[in-house]
Length: 153
Image 1 (spheres, rainbow, N blue to C red):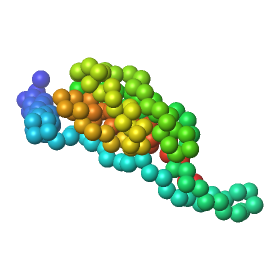
Image 2 (tube, rainbow, N blue to C red):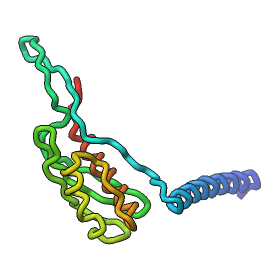
Image 3 (tube, rainbow, N blue to C red):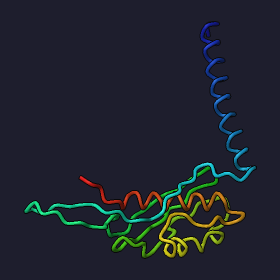
């Protein structure tokens, strides 16, 4: 290998190590002080929109979300969670954890689906000792709600 090529390998390796170290340091620092790494805050609210029928007459509707069951995924460095969120008439009617692959047990977050239905929000109370699982769960709910949104077009 040429001397010039060795310099590039060393430079690239050093750059990758620096990026990795910075990400690791940031993640560990946030975990130590209890700050969420990726935290979605969004409440489940309706908004008014205007639709036109085939005669050009506008009808006002409060439908922000489509009816149906939507899948969402949330993940972080401790694993991933998949959920199924059922929506009827702009209300979250059911939430199920369809796949749980986090570092700790599913029993830590077993009450969160009911909390989402009760609050009608992706935001839930943090479960002490299961912060990463709680955050992944919230992100999964938000992912499903994003897929359920009616798109103005």
